[in-house]
Image (tube, rainbow, N blue to C red; front, top):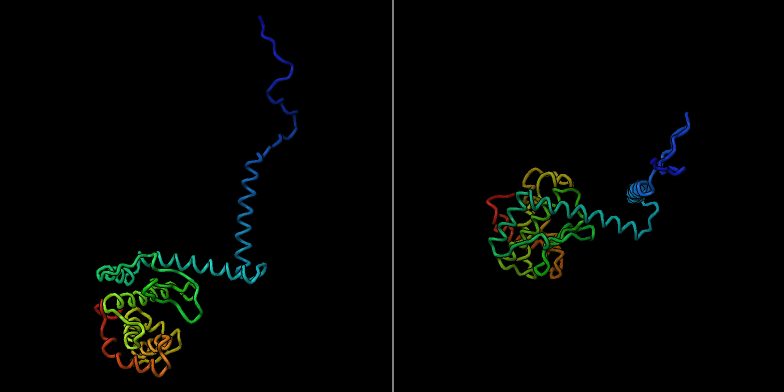
Amino acid sequence: MVASHSSESSLPSEAPSGAQPTVRVSEAGSSEKEKKENKAFERWRKTLSLITGVGLSTEEFQAEIEKADRKTCELYKEQLIKTSPGVRFMMNNLVKAGCPLTKNMLDCGPCDSTKSGGFSPDHGILLCQNGFFSKKHQEHTMIHEMIHMYDHCVFNVEWDNLRHHACSEVRAAALSGDCNWSREVRRGFYTFTKQHQECVKRRATLSVQANPKCTSRAAAEKAVNAVFESCYNDTRPFDEFY
């Protein structure tokens, strides 16, 4: 018995001689490609808008800037905690002093343009995400604030006492790298004799002057000068200037 076949086969019919085959792109594949292209275009648009400010409101532009600053600050923070000898040294010594510092106590946030960081006994260390011009600058700032934390832990600093504050500022400026020659050149100071000491005095005075308990620059200078010799030469926990 011969099996019968339907006159309409389920297989596609053979294309006529010379005809071009029809190419069909699945809707799913096309949709996925469009999504990728749209994402790429959106990234390009946001980057261009961030650079030029075109297409963004003032609030949107500021929000994008803050987002980018925070991302960079957090990235550098993670890298420096792992690779910076100075940062790792200070973190280890804070543990030994009984005041361990976790990365969550190093907070990136926006500040006014005059600051790059700060220390609070109650809240930890603030890293001014919009205040850094390089990874090295952030490294020096992290070490600077860690020295304040170390002093608070080991020496029971009373921050309302201008001499206490001055001593910690002198030590932080001297030991953190804030007054390295390259940093001073960037600031426009080129003195060759006692440049490091002068830088430490100047920066410590500026910080003490910002203390709410300080009434004038003269009062800040007086506090710094009173403690400078002993505090400048106290390099704990370092053996020498970093």
